[in-house]
Each structure stands twice: as structure tokens, then as C-alpha cells.
Length: 107
View 1: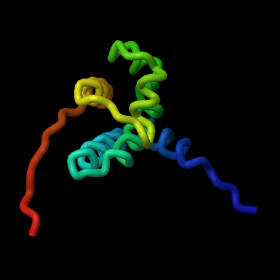
View 2 (view 1 turned 30 degrees about the vertical axis):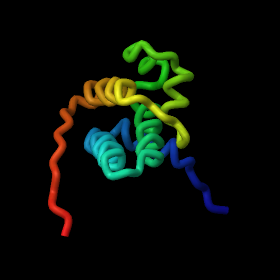
View 3 (view 1 turned 90 degrees about the horizontal axis):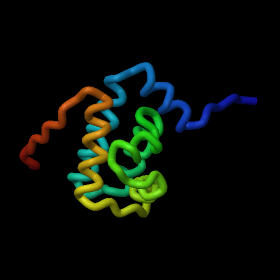
């Protein structure tokens, strides 16, 4: 019988030991938001929050209830731009990264 590990556990462990991976997840989530795939972006952010700051600490940092944050970062969530900005700001500080957006030409 093959032993498998839960995907969320794998992501959590990788984020804990690899800061570049965590930054890449944040980058991917932001890119997905900006390119019209908010559902996937929210789920990536949810995994990143769980693996880094946690929803309870995020609630304190953003002054938003934890349950509301869970809903915002669900597949059907609908965070306002203010809430999304607050979440990204906490993650940015936790990961010690800046966010820089660039546009490129599509051919």
C-alpha cells in the first residue's frame, strides 16, 4: 500500500523550510488575481495563511474576525479590495518581501 501525505501538510512543510517557495506562492496568487482567476488565487492565499501567520493572528493583524477571513479566502469568497490589501500586507510583512507588479506584452 502506498503511503500518501495530505497536500495541505506538504505545502505547510515546504513553506516552513523554503522561504522562496512561500514567496512564489504569494507571487502566483497575486498573478492569478490580476489575470482573472480569483477563485484559485484565494485558495492559494488560504494555504499560505495557514502555513505562515495562521487565521487567528491574521484576524488580529487585520482587525477582522477569523471566520470572516476564512470565508473571504474560500473558493466562493468575495473579499473587498480593502480586505484583500490588508491580507496581502500581513503576508508581505511575514514573508519579508515587497510586491512589485510588471506588465508584459502579450503576443
